[in-house]
Image 1: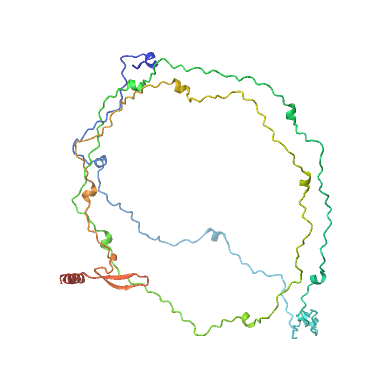
Image 2: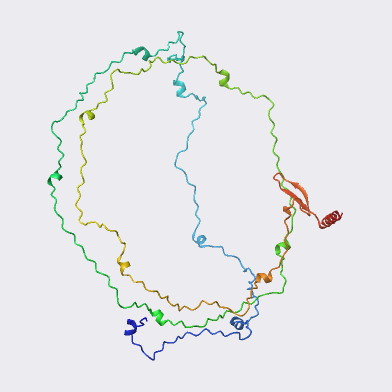
Length: 436
């Protein structure tokens, strides 16, 4: 049996005669329908309509001119007195003109002093740079061919010292400073801590919570909905499908656009001359290809054997060196030789117990259902008027009720609609054809 006592229940004293404070919030009560709704408002009751008249305009008085003459005198005319002023006589003497009866000589000093000399044409000192082809035959030799004399290859004397290895008589000393100075010391035993054994508790586990103890799972009533029933708003007046566009729109005749025809290409009748100045003036000459007079590079070969010896091979002598063994410390802990049982302290001391499932105090999730039938009607289902679906005339090769007139260069075909009389005749003719 589980223990229901906790530290909270032991130390908390219970007080009697204490009621929780009540809320002052009014309860939501539905008053229901108390009669027909009056459409009057405070604006309708307080507002009194008055008769509004147009405000009379202000009449302008008629203009009446004043009798008598206007006094045009000013203070400037009264204070300013006129004086007689004589014109100003200039003190500069008048210009005198000395005119003679002789003819004016218009020859300038430049023409009079400058005399034109007779100059002869100077001969050009520029050398004649015109090309004169030589009369002798072309030799074809170059200065390199004339000045270069081929000589035999002479081997160069080698000044390299002889590669003779120098051997040492002393034996190889392979002892290191680590081998000489290292002293091994014995190691102490490692401290091993003894694990304490696990001691399970003798008291049972208290898994009771305050939620389990205080929550009793009382059944409550479901909240009621005060939402008014959605009423249908319908009207018996037929739907007016006419618009201002349909009533006032006038269909105007449309004329086809005028197409501009391009000029037809006319090929020339005369023969085209495909010759060029290069093809007409160029004269081909037979020229021999250039032959090089430089001697060919001959490979140099020697009868002496190739010396493979190098200073590295001669001076370096490989010694027989053995790999040094790795210096390891002795193992302080001895490894176990037996088989591992893979048993941990948790597996050894754990005692399995039967689990008791927790009791759920959550109320049942029951759906809210009503006895009234569901109103599935919508405004679309009540006000929708089915209309006939007409087929587009453009989907036919020859649409009924239309006569082909013309087509443009883009492939657009234009049809003309037949009047109602021609339509009736065409339908009667089709019916007679079907009967026959």
